[in-house]
Length: 91
View 1 (tube, rainbow, N blue to C red):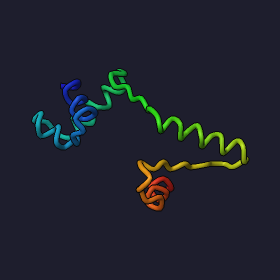
View 2 (view 1 turned 135 degrees about the horizontal axis):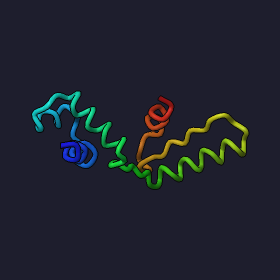
View 3 (view 1 turned 90 degrees about the horizontal axis):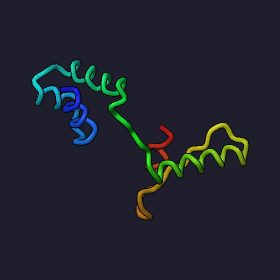
């Protein structure tokens, strides 16, 4: 059940509530199963470009200009609204 719940959550993108309903258990059980999968290192998350490149740019800006924290907000395409992306990155 743990592997099935983990697959549905990370691969299929289902919510914990959806998985609980499908498997006929409570949402708390799903939370525990997912935590157990992480603890057992059955889940591996890899961050690929462009996010890695963005982090490298942030670190370079911090070093070069002596600033505490730089946030680089990547646009998905040239038509994207930079204001929304900046607001989302700033929290």
